[in-house]
Length: 255
Image 1 (cartoon, rainbow, N blue to C red):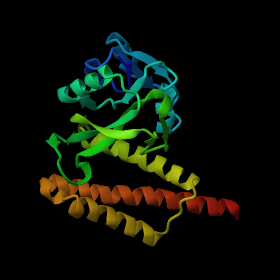
Image 2: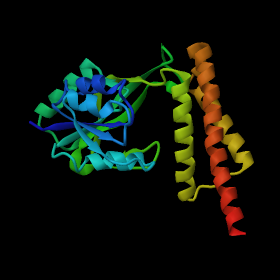
Image 3: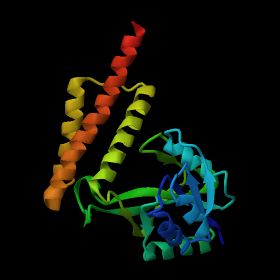
Image 4: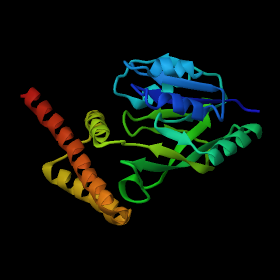
């Protein structure tokens, strides 16, 4: 039987950490918390509920946090879970069956359904998506500072069931992530050589709204669907505006 470690990244997640650790323990006894400097009770609650806690200073790089965990376990398989996600019973049972089959040559994606602002979304920005989350520990590495993604050459299969994603309990939480993610994206894009212009910013933002509202049918989620699609327009615009700001600052420094 293969062994499994579930990895959870945290920073001030005292509202979620106890529940997510208990949720993960339905699949394995090895739950790893990679904390980036919580100042609340996150670490204490994680330890009290049986998780192993490791500290890595936050440097704006989500992939580095995820890769850090790979050296903190000897488990055959790793599964990554966000603090605001929950493994549904059907998915947990499928994971246990996979471990019992003693397979170590596949990676797995799982459906994720979002609940936000007290509503469950089925379209638009928060449309249910598939995310790659479970891998042979020695065959995966993460890349990208924000909107990071795994690199793994193993064949992809799907887990049954889904993850329930409890994102954005309120608009303050949305705004906090908005500021963090747009800044990290812009800095990473600039370092990667990406450049933009005022016209490109408008086109990217407009295309983003059209994709979420029309192509992904965000209009079917009512007024809240419309509102999140409009927010996506501004999210896209702001991240490119921050990129343009970095470009202009660099030009001034070269003079």
